[in-house]
Length: 445
Ligand SMILES: CC(C)=CCC/C(C)=C/CC/C(C)=C/COP(=O)(O)OP(=O)(O)O
Image 1 (cartoon, helix red, strand yellow):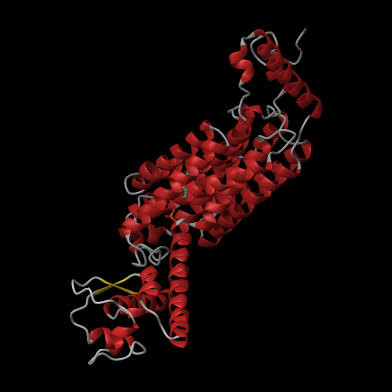
Image 2 (spheres, rainbow, N blue to C red):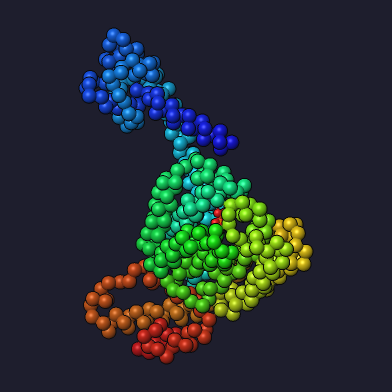
């Protein structure tokens, strides 16, 4: 289908350049006869209503296609102009459709949207009592752009490998629908714009995390796929960073409780990718990738890695509860969820069939959205604690500004640095209380 579309598009483009219509042509000849309807009345010239013949009958004139120049250069009969502009409009629409589709696929848009969902969830969890919705939108948009850039670069580096795999051979680069320089331009502009958006609208730490993650994915993980099976563990770090990025964008800091969602993402990816690499063994071998499952013909070690990492998911619900992120309900739900995915991994370990690998893969697909929704629904916010933190922040700020000279008091800190601190375990507050230079639960005046 895409082949037919791209062929028809290619032939249209070829027609445009080899038989340029004078209605969109700019004259570049050294014979500077004015290009207007009066030319068509010259002997030997046909009417501009038959533009191709007309242009071919003028060997002294050379044209290049320039849409903007045509309207100024040629004064058309209204009917011909209308039908031509409809045709050109269709061509432009087709071009836009073609490249939008290429960008969508280069960006692995569905995967990028999942990445955005994890980053958005991280942002909400790191926001404390009040969510800054503009900040949330900027974080999601910035993450989407940087993830799109990372995914595009990944494809730029894997054109040959992707061409050899069934799953990926129809991607825009191996199928020739877009050129490598074009894809690099798309990736660079998305990467720069996304990082700049995060830097301007959230904070430098979040922007730095996004940029480093792009580098880790495109320049470390991607080549590693062809070198060593450890790539899956490096890829798991890449997947774990976006929720941390979201948390940092909201709170400006990395704390212990910011690690719960990234840890879930990290451990979750191992059963997910082990199942995928087991099910697509032949494809990965054809593509020249060194996946863990390829060096494990029995599948025993692959299944064991998957099970081990499912079991690591078990304590996360309790940690989320204990560290003040979510309620006891979430602790229970998360534990049940981890038990469910562990049971599919256990089944695969005992009986290593394609059916059981697929079951584990489907369970992994369910796990993440349910875990994240549970975290959001049972998000725990201790309002008394938050009030204490906000009050102490304000008091600390006013004490600081009254004791320092005008320079500090005049310049108010940027919006992004004034968000309330996220909920933290009470012990964290107790430990900072004796130090007057840190926000404390109480300040004596
Ligand atoms: C903010 C930011 C930069 C986020 C990036 C997040 C991101 C791209 C996560 C993907 C993680 C991952 C290991 C995907 C598999 O890639 P693969 O190369 O194995 O997939 P493929 O075989 O389909 O190409």
